[in-house]
Image (cartoon, rainbow, N blue to C red):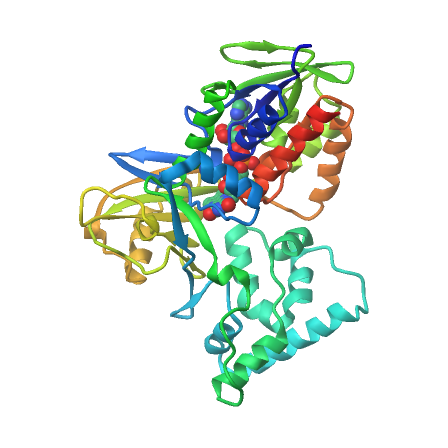
Length: 452
Ligand SMILES: Cc1cc2nc3c(=O)[nH]c(=O)nc-3n(C[C@H](O)[C@H](O)[C@H](O)COP(=O)(O)OP(=O)(O)OC[C@H]3O[C@@H](n4cnc5c(N)ncnc54)[C@H](O)[C@@H]3O)c2cc1C
């Protein structure tokens, strides 16, 4: 009997891991990637002999099975790196994720008492709810942290980051991504600060002591090693193969068309990891008007990375630092995680800015502001910058705008008719996974398709 065939659209880590799973289940695999290399958001970008990530990308080992596959594929290229990340707040540097004691140190005493009371009331409300949960991010943040802490810390930052006020964002993002802070923990830290209680050992919050996984060439090693392993095992991987049309007939996808080739296999299963709105627009025949309009409503926040080669041994202590009041929201220094930088005595900085396509951050016109903010933060002076270039990601973050759930449902209800199709991963499911979770999504979707 002929083995089943899985055609995968998109060669980010989700598509690559889905291919691993499909091979393990005995399927034939064809994978089509638009760019000239694999990796998607986690791909590396080489410039004058140095590697730059799109935002410092490191693998978490939370999913043991996925980690084991990646570890084997990367072999000796894998580096273990202790997590050290910071957030710059009110002129001081704190650990990220925020610790209770950082909140204590960073807030003036009166505001602190208000914030603690708000946090405590929010915690009480969550245990004994007196009203239904709010629908927008503002209500969700207030439910999580209380009004004073929301106004003091989250409102402005969230607005600047997304370019949308938290009132216009869905509560979903906050519920999925933001950790709950305990007022009791913060209060215990308060007592420790004034030596009214014994300091605890430093074991709260697994993330603080996490080991991350990286390489001397940055993020590019993981997708490259996964792809090499797939090719060795017989998968058919194609780059420069942007999908332009997806044909369907009687509730099945029957073929996909790229510029160069028409991949026709009505018996195949199809797994799409490309951005969901684009996938919808490529369907032929076209979906009904309400599905197309739901797809138009789903938007992504683009990102521009200013990738700098700097004539300095080191610019910061951490792997990356978050900033609240600068044109950039995060700066990474991958050399601190083991990246090789040439020539000696130099380092690279990955300066991340969320933006809109075509605005001054996207076009590079914001560079003077980037330079002055880097200098103001004491990271480097304009004279230290040897070269810079831009890396763009049009689909960096799905925007969970208020009401996006209904649009997503309209689309997924429509796609449910295609028995041989799954859309998954960060772009295909319009979701927020890390690399290992995107890989898990790919693996589950592939298994579901092949086992049905
Ligand atoms: C700035 C930033 C930093 C991050 N840092 C980390 C981190 O440190 N650790 C971590 O675990 N996660 C991190 N993430 C999350 C991680 O990048 C993603 O979750 C993961 O890479 C998603 O993989 P994916 O395959 O689902 O999507 P993608 O990587 O977006 O892959 C989709 C693929 O589809 C391709 N494609 C698109 N259109 C077409 C088409 N028409 N035809 C064919 N192919 C197409 C794209 O080129 C791409 O390769 C970060 C994300 C961002 C934005």
